[in-house]
Image (cartoon, rainbow, N blue to C red; front, side):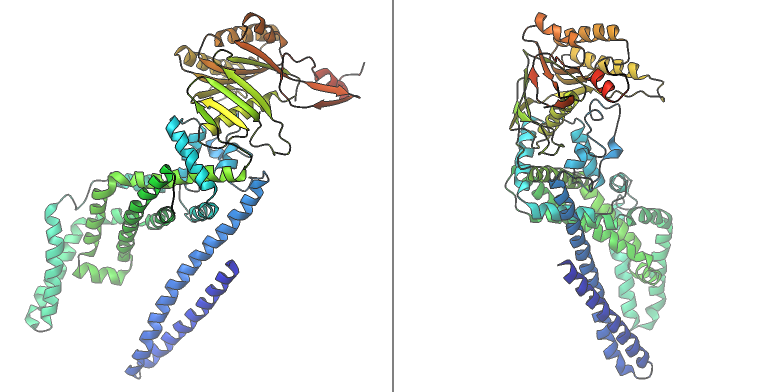
Length: 576
């Protein structure tokens, strides 16, 4: 189809050249024989039609090229390679409550795997959702229903995504457009101007018409034309600024309208998508009309057109008045209309993620403080290599201590349950046979970063992170907490005492906490807090002088560590 479209464009281009030559030749002969004008006019009409047709076909070719690119990249994504999609690195924040620890943004991130938004605000909305903007239970259910429906609408998703790739949006386009809505009116606030814009052009055109029959009226017609320029002169500086600001938004408005058109033309059954489609229908008409007004206003850039229409029709003032009228009637709705696009992009992303992971399932949102997962894995690990685990944590068994050797799977397990919780609270499928969780804020301490800018050491940064968590818990705020090796920046005795004291505090507050550690002393807490604290582990196996892991979560404390074995194996220390 793409190759056929390219052939059609080449044919149209060739015919356009031929008609242009025909027009030039017939125009040349018109100077010697005026009858050739009857040949020049058809050539001109055909040429204009071919230019318009070429523009349409070129847009279609671009769309087909984008569709081809999307299909190629999605083919890779199904196998686990999402490198062709934007990674959201602009949203990386080492001090975020959990996103840096869980690889939400950056290369190989959750954002790169799930995001299919192409507008700047669509990507920001997706980043905000993954970064902790919690939905209500009903909203999560509505997102799940929409994602299920879009999972089966591959053609729509790809066409909508391809249209998004065509948008060519600049970072501040939408913000500047919304800012324009707040600019005070130049003309619309003056009711008498509406009458002037009708009467003066009508009088000018009438006087010019009368001039053909009564020559004495000519000075009056000229006077009226000059009067139009005089009035324009009073406002010309503000009009030039107005035009300079809004003229650059024509293309982006047309692209927004194009996306809205795809959305309103599709038939949906889920309530959320039906609502977006209805809003898109109204938005499409209004945004197109704004784009048309801006396009008309841009005609002033042609000097001859500018001279003619401003002498007869008060053209610049007419355009400003109509744009300000549009702004007055629609300013309260424009942001909502454009938000339809970014919300639809997020839902298409969820639908694509579901399509790419047919073995994943939708979670159940609970009202009680419980997280239960069966056959749960990490959604970004290749399914053939991923090892599944089960876990159950609730209010009465709220703290889990996970011990194990280096590389046994402790950190990966923490990230698995954290990333799946994020997916669940966004209405997406999760990498589990079943998954239950409440609507809860997440906090983590796994990769706490130091900060030269804030003169803050790694250890002090970790203490600040823990303090923030405890402050929130003392305010009775339920939290889901993931901690990996607490207090790494101090000596082993101090680390052990501090870690034990922290765990004892956690059981007093409304939270679910999973703590990964090498310190087996934390496992002793289970004896004195029966039911509230439980021990699990990941074990290593050394057989025939070979180290191996099964990455399966088991009850109890780890019995085998591997640091000394690995140091001997690598020649760092001598063998026994």
